[in-house]
Image (cartoon, rainbow, N blue to C red; front, side, top):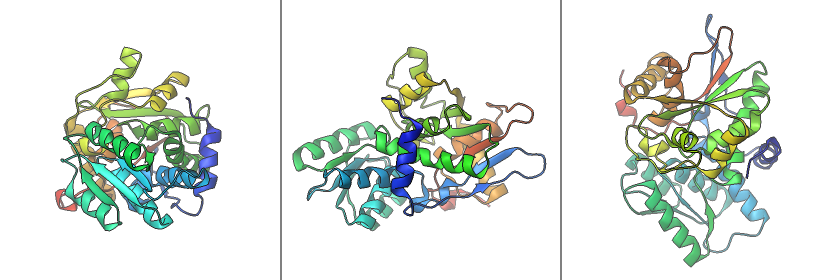
Length: 309
């Protein structure tokens, strides 16, 4: 399945009034870089958009029983679904890997969700969530590879081009690819997309090279939020519909970008969210003269004591 802009617009209508319209921070001086401040979204992450769209759709379609919703997550999707379930009065069960950051697990629990640890990485938590959905009858929500999830994420791109129609390029971080798939659907034919991944988790880059999604090793500073073992089918279909500019960035580049966002903008970004900005700061992606670029800062769920001065 390839998402379309109609899917994104339907999601935008469905979640209207429930999510924040996050600001688009304009450039300073001769800089032509805008920052989409999605780290200011409910729960500090873009995934709240898709969580609302998925759960509201489940309600519309009569999918929800006593078991409510279940999701597997490295942290951020779990946060989003726990928050949305609380807002909608739905039971939520969240499976996380053993290595999920404690700061995220505590917040998921605080929203009222039942948190269960399973396995050493996201893929194992995902298997456990599928099993729970089958045995308990819970409606399953994928962290990234589900049409309602990706379409919800794409609504932030509608805001970007509404606020600044002259934007030529939107830069996004890619893990499983839900954000990329949604943004690509929203802007296809109107703006190009730069898909940025850590060198240690090149899910989309490897899939493009192989001609199909493939499993990759998961490691590095951004693994807690971009730690999918393979890119989703929706993201792979999106790159087949219109090729993105695929860029890889190193560990040091990600760390430097996160520090720069804090030092220069006082944006408390997690490493996964700083990955997109790292492409510009490191020179891995160099905009053309006059190119107007929006970078999505997609999440702020990090330990603030590690940000420095």
